[in-house]
Image (tube, rainbow, N blue to C red; front, side):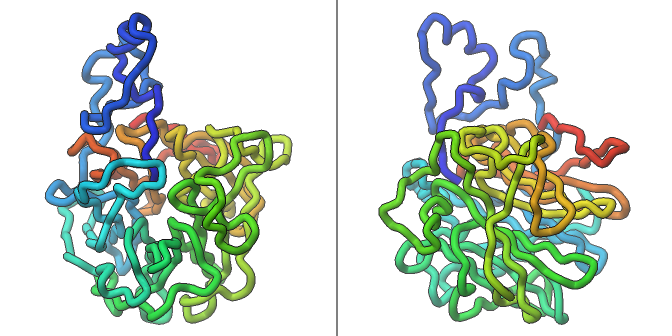
Length: 369
């Protein structure tokens, strides 16, 4: 969730100016541009147009977790607001306070905003920053999993329940025991077992939990050397979906040689925004690389891994952050994601959707957003 300047986000037409000026400056108050992964001067203006349009324009939304419940698509996004907080690498400017749940009958159909489903003031233990959520359905109940900083400013993950997929949701009195960091994502397998994936670096505080307990004096960022990268966590959920059933473990993400990805391998290592889906018997763990702005994926034979890195799902979007979900709708697969098309500000984002295409071997075709 933090903000950090990346040279790749400079406009192609600035390339010549960079050569003369010797630097490319970042101005957080100006509109951010699309990634320089596209050819600089050979492309026409049309080639720089967004692949998809925002699903809603009256509020800012991000981090869309999409699900099909009772034949309808429900989206559980963050609700971005203009809080007037200066940008920093801890993501303090992402000061979200509530959730709006969205629904639609078909992909790119009319979207219904069901209003506020959960507010920070209604979470007994919450302090600030209601970041990216996810949802699940079991036991005739809908569960909303959310990260929020507690009153000691430590990110924990909470659970809220409802009888309706659109809410409103009522939060449990305390966070999930053993939970920490951000970006919860739920996967329910065919055998009924459910798993919660979570974790995020920098402002997500994952690097502060390396000893098993929170270290307020730990570095603001993860190691940047050739040491094994910090990875997302996964825990099997209890039958009531409100607690972990057993210890939380760290995922293993391996390279093509079967060795752990390294912390300085920033175009492949995990940063935040994990998501798991299953396709033809294989488990696909996808995630954001954070400061290199890619959505990538790894594949494994079990929901708990290990996972072997495969490639890039989506090249950088307009804006610093990238966060997604992947869902099957009526036999086709779609990726829900966000960018900053409407505002040009990395903390005021808008959610989008486009089709996810695969090759015959199950590998995912890279999307240029």
